[in-house]
Image (cartoon, helix red, strand yellow):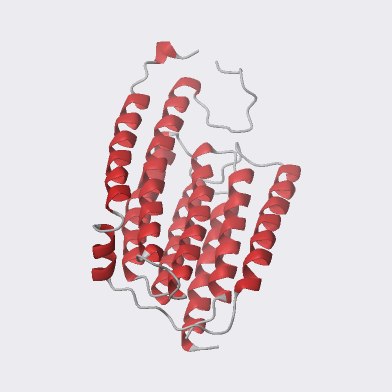
Length: 102
Length: 168
C-alpha cells in the first residue's frame, strides 16, 4: 500500500527545480542538467500512474523507457551543437547578446 | 504512513536535495556529480514504486552515459576547476528563476495533489509483461525509436564536422 501524495510532490519538486536550473544557468552545458531534472520528474509521474494499476499495455513502464531513450538522443545532439558553437565562438555564455561572435 | 511511504520519502528527499544542489552549486563539475545523486534518488523512488526495469535503465543510461557525456563536454569547453565566476547569474536573474521554478512546482502540485485518493495497492508489472508489451503493442514506436537514435547519431556527427570557415 502506498499513498500517491509522495510521487506527485516529488514530480512537482523535480520539474520546479529543473525549470529553475534551465533559467538560472548561463553555462550552456549546465542547462542540460535542468532538462534532465524535468525529464526525471516526468518519469516519476509516468511510473506513478502504473502504481495505481490504472494503466493498460504496461504504459507506465514502457513510456518511461521511451522518454529515457529520447532524452539520451537529445543530449547527444545538444552537446554536439554546444561543442561546435564553442569551437566557433570560444564561449558558451547563454546571456551573451547575439551577433557578438569574434 | 506505510513502509513504502517511508522508503519513498527517503529516496525522494535524496532526489530533491541532489537536484537542488545540482542547480545551485557554483562548481560546474560538482553540478554534474550532484545530478548523479539526484538521478540515483529518482531511481530509488522508481524502485519503491515497483518499476525495477525503468530504475535500472535510468541508472544505466542517465548515470552511465548522459552524465559522462556532460562531464566530457565540460572538460572540452574548458570548465574551471574552482567556482565558475565567469557564468555567475546576477541577483535579478536568480530571483526571477527561483520565482519561475517555485511557480511551476506549486502549479503542478496544486493540479496533481487533488487527484490523490487513499492508499492504493502497488501494481506489480513484471519485466516479462513489459517485454511482451514492447514487442507487441508498442513495437512500431519502439522501431521508430531506433530510427531516432540513428538520426541523432548521424546529426551529431554532421554538426560536429561543420568546418570553421562556414561560421557566419
